[in-house]
Length: 324
Image (cartoon, rainbow, N blue to C red):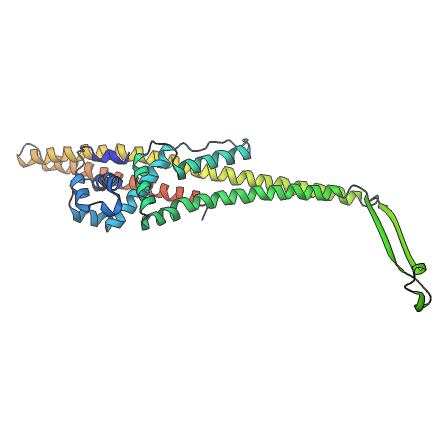
């Protein structure tokens, strides 16, 4: 949870923990007062950091607010259940589940995400530039993916209509034609009543010799429809699969980050104790170096997990955008 960083933690020297405390404190302040009234000094007081740290990590108050808003949406993505479908599932049901998932994410019907709910309430009253970034990075890609799936569904409908047109060629064509006018050998009597002529008659044509052509044309249209259905199913399955994989990776990286962070905190604490014992002459310098090496390995693991988590988030955004 975003607010969990506000609880006391031994990882005071961990840059990621410090950044997390700033984000959590900013979520509380911005959620209560909004962006305009939110105080950077109040955020720094709650996070137990100075104002310079906020500028170092986020560049400005606007940058901090943007990160808080995006982090709140990332939290929703981690907690919302993603659609699940096997390769044999129905494409229409898959589209329904996909739309339901997207609407839950965009409209936030649940009340289980108070941070995002408060932030969006302030945005509705007084929009900021961060809202535009959120729309471009999160919401527009979702709807772009839905439009791509809807286009594939419309293509299936068009292919069904083509089959109907091709099948209609099997049936006889019945025509009723008529003609009317004037006919006279003399120009003076051309427009007389006796000069009027007309004819009407039906005609029917049966494609006796072209049935083979019609048959193969119908089969071709049916094959085109099956291809469109396959593409439609693939669009739905691909969209769901990409999002599900990305969400799973984000969840796994978050769990790994917690475990590695705890290991780093313990390594840092052990290093401090060993350094104090070394300064008293109770331990050798080799033991201190070994403790420092363990702590540095934990720091490298923390940085590696953080990078993998960021990459998973980027892949999620790419999946929601339909592969851009």
